[in-house]
Image (cartoon, rainbow, N blue to C red; front, side):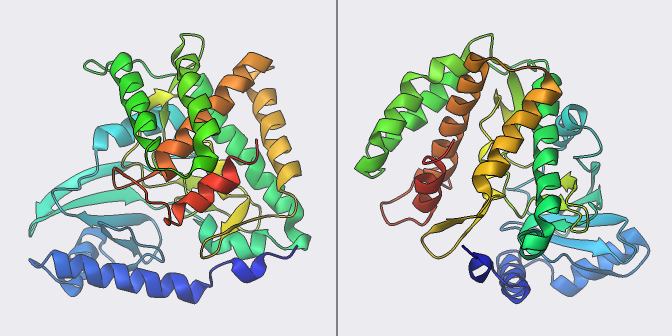
Length: 330
C-alpha cells in the first residue's frame, strides 16, 4: 500500500509553524518576532531565520551558517539545562546537542544550542518512504537501535531526591485513572500493563533517562543516508524504566491521517530489524528482558497517548488512533 498520500506536505508544516509563531507572540506580548530575530542575530553575529518546525511554547531560530540555534521560551516553560546535560551524558554528543542558558531578556528565557544537522524525520519521511530508498530507511532503523542501546548501556546514577518508588506509584496512578476514560477495547492491554508494571521496576530492568516526546519532529535524519543526526527537545524527559519511549520506533514506521494510522508496507520487517540490531549491540537479550521491554513500551504508550497536557483523553481524541495501532503490534 502506498501511504505517501497521507504524509503531510512541506507547505502544511510551514503553515503550522507560522501559526505557532503568531500564537507565541500573541501570548508573550513583551516583545515581537522582529525584536527576537534582531536579538538572536546579535548573539549569533549573523542573520537568523525561523526553524522549519516550531514548538508549542517556544520560538526558535537558526543561524545562517547552521552552526547554532537560539530559542526563546517563557519563564513558566523553561528548558531544564541539567536534564539536557544528563541527556548528553547518557546519549553522547552524536545524539544530543549542547545547550546553555544565555540570559533572561524581555520576559523570555534565551537558550543557545548547537544546531542539529539533517532535517526532522517528519520533513524527510516522504523521501525515506520511497521504494528506491528502502535501504536508507533501514539505516534509520539501525540508528534507532543504536540510540536505545546507548541508554541501556549508560545507566545514570539516581540523583539525590529522586525516589524510584514514587515514580512507580505515579505510573500506577496514571494507568489506573485511564481505566475510567479509555474505550473498552483497550481494557485488556491496560490491565496487563498495570499488573505487570512491577516487572519494569525490578532491579533486573534498568532505569534510563527517557526522552519525553520521541516524535518525528524531534528526531533529525540525513535524508541521503538515513542516519540519525540528533534528537532535540528534551523538555519533559526524565528517569524511568528503560523502554517507555520505544513508541518512537513505531512513529518512524508509519504516518497518521486525520483519525487513522497507516503503517509503512515494510514495518514488520523493519521492526524485526530494530529488535535484532538492538540485541546485537547490547549483547544477547533474554526472552524475559525483551518481554520487560515490551511491557515498558505498552506503559509508555498509555502514558503518552492516553493523556494530553496531563489530562486523560476523551473517547474521540485522535491520540487514541496511535494507541489502537501501536498496541496492535510488537
